[in-house]
Length: 183
Image 1 (cartoon, helix red, strand yellow):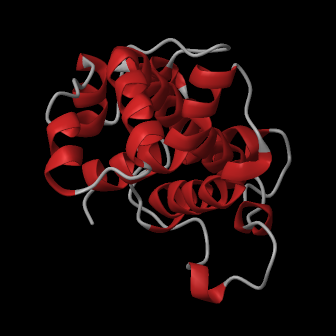
Image 2: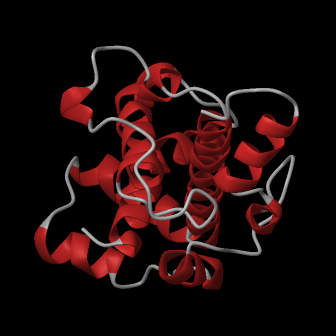
Image 3: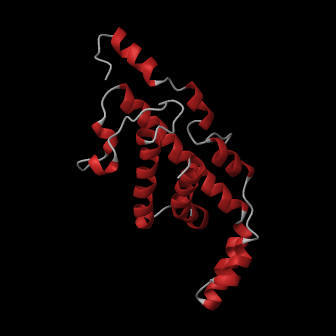
């Protein structure tokens, strides 16, 4: 899959959690499997497929089939772990925020769909297509899917801060200058 498809998959996986926040003001443990899948996909993008500007075109994580249990980011040491962890976190936070924005942009449509589901217990085929054809994608979604960047403001940072994130080479030099081994 290409980068925009993978980012889209992550946003969809986080959509359930975002929907809980939009509808109920809190998240439950119900979307934990989707969260695990989204995290794994983000880790693969950053650490295996080299789809991070900050990390660059290098694999810093073992492929999923080579991992021996536990979080793969914990199997990487030094600057690469710090940078990969930051990039995975930024990717997940932005995908979550984008999913939430898409839900808010279509809140009236979601309520209409929910009412229809209460009446009919299922939405499929032409009925589902009719609703989905009316959904609107926020401009931020299109920008993020294409470029991986967005002007979406997160709670504690902006996604644009990724350009201020040091590269692995810069972290390696910094670690070596302090007497570390620069893994």
